[in-house]
Image (cartoon, rainbow, N blue to C red; front, side):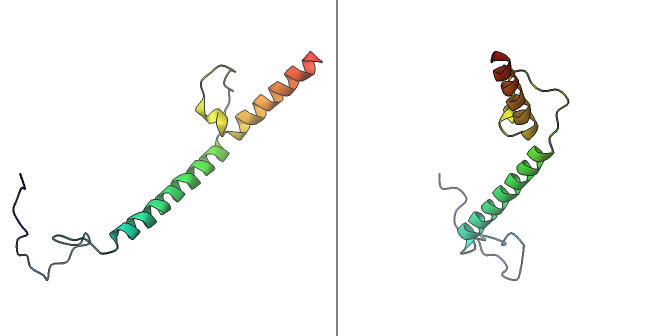
Length: 91
C-alpha cells in the first residue's frame, strides 16, 4: 500500500513554524545535529550540578546497590575514609 496518493495542491501563502505542508528544510540534518548537541550539553550540565549538590544523611552500606556511589563526591570521600580506617586498623 502506497497510501494517500501524491501531494495535493495547497495555498502557498500559508505559513507555519513547522514548515507548512510538506515542509522539509534543506538543512534539517544539520539543525537536528546542532540541537542534539545542545540538548546533550544541557543534560550533562544539569547532571554535573545535581551530582555536586547531592547530600546524603545516611551512607549506603558496602554491599548496597547505589548507582550514585560512582559520581557522588560525598559517598566517594566516605568510602575512602572507611578504606583508610580499615587499612589503619589492620596495621
